[in-house]
Length: 181
Image 1 (cartoon, rainbow, N blue to C red):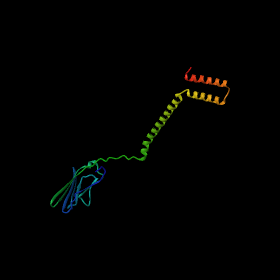
Image 2 (cartoon, helix red, strand yellow):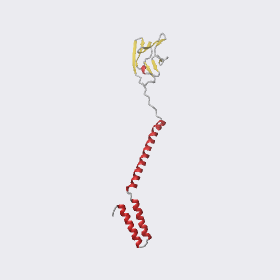
Image 3 (cartoon, rainbow, N blue to C red):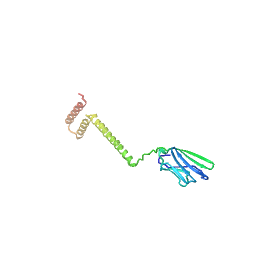
Image 4 (cartoon, rainbow, N blue to C red):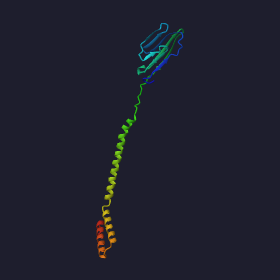
């Protein structure tokens, strides 16, 4: 039984021809003299005898110190009978109740931290790969603008002399970009 529970011990006798009922536990004793209608008890207030049926011992809100051997002796015309119980009271283990609010209070900071880490990682990756593509080929933008300029010149037309001059300038720029002489 767990601490705080109640228990009833019963001698299971008919009560006919009973002259005395005695309950004992260590130094505690309850004695009921049937013919004299008198009793004696030094049990605590939590341990009581049923006022109608003296063969029942009730322990209300059992405590650890209530553990032990309880004996009921019934004396009648034929002698006496004895019944013994070994009562063990265990310390009650309280399970901590968790509410939804306490779960939210615990999970919310974890989720916020995880989200912050993810955002930081995405920003770092974007900066890293964004910088790499810009610096990967520094001449690419210049080459594209020169190529576009050459295409525009051809589309616009012009004299052969102007075209040749522009081609030469284009080739010189192109060679200086790729370091060809």
